Amino acid sequence: MKQKIYILFLLLTTVVFAQQKRVTTSVDSTKVKIGAQINLTLKTTVDTLSKVAFPEGKLFGRLEVLESYPTDTIKENDKYQLIKKYGLTQFDSGRYTIPSLQVIINSKVYPTDSVLVEILPVVVDTLKQHMYDIKDISTVPNDYSYWWIILLILIGVAGLGYLIYYFIKRNKKPVEEEILYASPIEKATAHLKSLEKKSLVERGEVKEYYSELTDIARTYIEEAIEIPAMESTTDELIAAFKIAVVKKKLSLTEETIKNLEKVLKQADLVKFAKSKPLEFEIADDKIKIEKTIYKIHQSIPEVVEEEEDLIDNEAIKAKILKRKKARKRNIIILSTVGVILLSLGILVAVKGFDFLKDNIIGHPTKELLEGEWISSEYGNPAIIIETPKVLKRMDVSKMMGKELGELANMQMFGYGSMMDDYYIAIMTTNFKQEIKVDLNQAFEGSLKMMEANGAQNILVKQNEFSTPEGVNGLRAYGTMSILDKLTKKSRKAFYEAIYFAQEGGLQQIVVMHEEGDEVANQITERIMNSVELAKLKQ
Image (cartoon, rainbow, N blue to C red; front, side, top):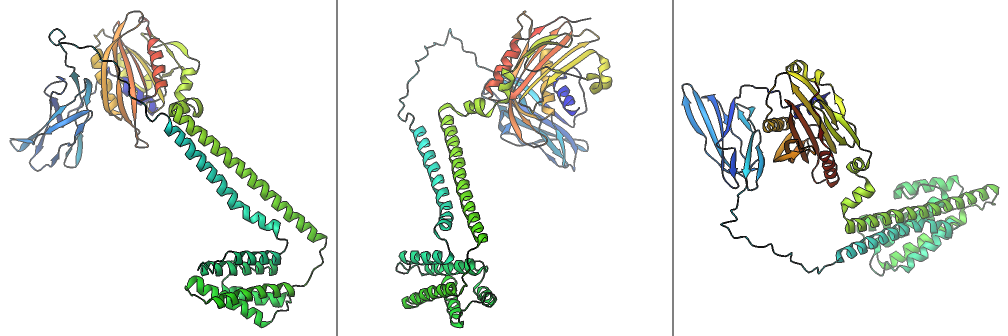
């Protein structure tokens, strides 16, 4: 219902509401030449204690503020009349709206009236002013050609290659460890040899050396004795280790446990206290770790592999195979996504984003244009028009109430709303008494209703419109900013409206869509070219 009222207020120009204004608005002229000054005057009468703030800014709508003059004050008995003047101009021909401004009186906002002004072009007398031929189009050498497209492709390929390499490298190591090392002792021995080959001590990377050395020991203890060694502190690990020795009946001496504890605490000092042990101490710590690991391995009772162990081995193999498949699948997915993104990037670079949006992503107005159009007759006096969708009738009597009694007949039809991708509205009105309908006045009323419902910075251009049968009307078009009252965001929209006065009736057609939408422009052109008018049915 709110949407219907919104559309009604936008189109309805035959019913005028008046109220007393606290602030009066006037201009010295509504038609001036390009660059000429328009003087806007705001007046208000207040008591002597009132505080008044007039609007300020560099732009009022699409009009530039040349000068904001000081406020004049005229005393009238016990009140003051305040007069504020502004000098405005515009350097492009067309019809412009001075928008409703806000005057604040004692912290309360009072809106001013909007004013429609026309900026006239400068007419050149070709008899007095010599005219020259248009010069040929100059060709500019294209030095850069398509190098930027090639560069974009190379960057995309390099980025895709790096992602694949990083993903493979990150997932490669854990699987190799499970495949190469059948037991914890073999794994620890291989890692100790690998650590020695890195020559970290010789390069002065003592902290990294101790970190890897203790990680090898902790990993072995966690896998061989099954205690949480990696996430435990040194004290927690030694305490749990002593309990495990007793529980699992490991034949380890007190000296072995103390040697392990000394190396772990030495590593803590190196990593967290920046301690620097001597070379012989580092070598001695490595020997202690090697002996500790070997003695733990020797103390673990040998267990004959039974059928359950074989089952566990098969489970491990299945787990490894599953990880391989997952890694392969992830690589394929990553590669596919990379190729798609790269292809889309090349397509945008070569064809442009509009081509991508229209043909791949999907374009809502293109679906309207390419769908099945409907030719139908709406209202009285009837408008015969072709549209991409059937226009729905709106119940004017419920929306207008008593106001409908002043009219002989009013009918409205519409599709969408002003905030949608495409909006169409038709209204036909005939009156009980014969009146002369002023199309310019009807359009000015529409502009006021647009402003009242969130339209801002309205740019107006006008010309005549003729149907194929030769019926003349008024065509108005331009751009505006529409504020969404829910999201508080505005968007730029293009509008086109045509008005006809036929046999004492008023016929109006309004279309609106996002500015710059070429597909929507084709829809509008097709709609307007299909307009036919029927006579009033008594």
